[in-house]
Length: 305
Image (cartoon, rainbow, N blue to C red; front, top):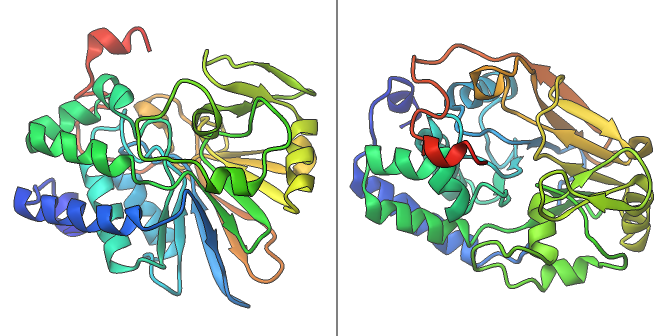
């Protein structure tokens, strides 16, 4: 299937629906906060936003090996939108999840939602390559994606960031009823949308939703929950990553030359048990067929995004 996709061939819709129904069943059974255990000497890779850049996803697998139970990956949300090979990305990730439930972990991003998919290309792409019914099923499956992961009780991985109030415990995240479109406020919204900033306390978010949080907020959350590090994504970074908050927070972004115009690098993070020190790998964009980013976007609406 991956090779067919590489050659710009389409999956028959029957198999598409089959993958979606199978992955929905797997995801529904998971808690909102997933605990991942990496065995002694085992490795674990965390990738950030991929945003429909299928050929860069294939490059990650070239550089770091295909996912398997011995080579597990966590993809930290925003699999789709903007890049024009979102269908290929999402079916590859979902099929790998079905093949290796313990080898692929998937976290919801703010772009795994109907409102974003309508504007930034995924809905248009699914309609062009499949049909409206599949758009609806994708929306349903996206509502089943977990919201965050904890690796070996040490590393908290989430798409966006932290909260507008202190004192949030992992048990509160575990208790979130996530099976819906993301709300406009509250814990689920903040997990998907918040950003760190270089300062203390909290500030209004530049996105107009959720919150910007400072290094003291990060440190208190880690201390309250006996954690060492936060890994999040959600923001394009020149080098593909950025270390902030005195080394306690890392942003990782895995879509190089984002939207075919940013010129940024991509990155992923490798962890090895038991030390779990982050080893950041940086990579450049690779060529892709001549279908521009945002080719399927609702251009009128995206002007206001």
